[in-house]
Length: 352
Image: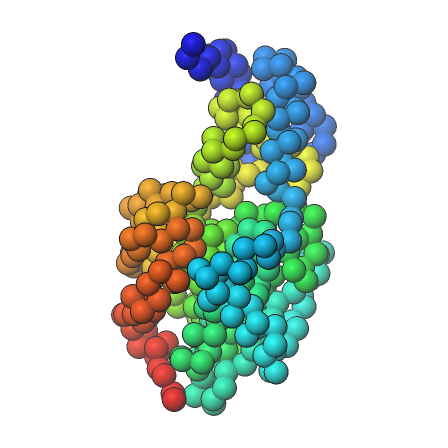
């Protein structure tokens, strides 16, 4: 027998409820009663127990922060990342920076200053991905500092590393936290030239940051293996789960949005790099591995086509998720160099 398709009235009801939810969240902060009302309305049509159980299951699976799993660190392909972690953690000039987010969470970043006076006004903010910490972008920060002479800032996204938080933000609240770090740099150095470089969820975060009104000091953005929207990526991950609840994603996602609003306080649908690049004015380099099965490279194509800013792209054959820099490090950094040179030649000064 073929796979049973969901009843159209379930999908229609879920979409109708999601539309009402969007109207609510556009006018005020979504409250507990609103969430329960939405869940209840969806449950009437789709089966309360099954849909709530599936939504809570997937919330726990995907939105609770988890620590880096070091079981794969012995793999040869992981060695550049391992060396980057060591470089950041053991750097003698590393500093801990702390700030308060708009919703009163204590957020943390690692800062390593430029090794030369010529680099004092150039900064690279390197942003990590899901289920990891700032140390995972150590290899990227090392290149910016040791080859370009830049200052480097490596934030821990909320709920990760040294930053407070009980949920994964998928770039939504994180974009505002990143603006706090940008402002902190500018308070210390009003003449700063800043680039943003993120991988995976960090790539989504930097793209969403560029969708906000940024100071002219932010010169460029490099996104590596970012998703088009959090919902699109959730559907991709959910469909690939071997042991998942028997609830179609068309019905699950509206209820997951409600659970997320109730438990994390934000609407997952608003975590949309795609919307951000449609209004971003920050020059952006899009990079993706052609063998990425976690975030398919088709998402990069969607993002690139939608972007209205100055833009370049790079697809890396044979590269799995966030492995472009490992598979072809020379090509990777040559592309970054040529991109930054076009944006502002001052960014690519190598003072050594």
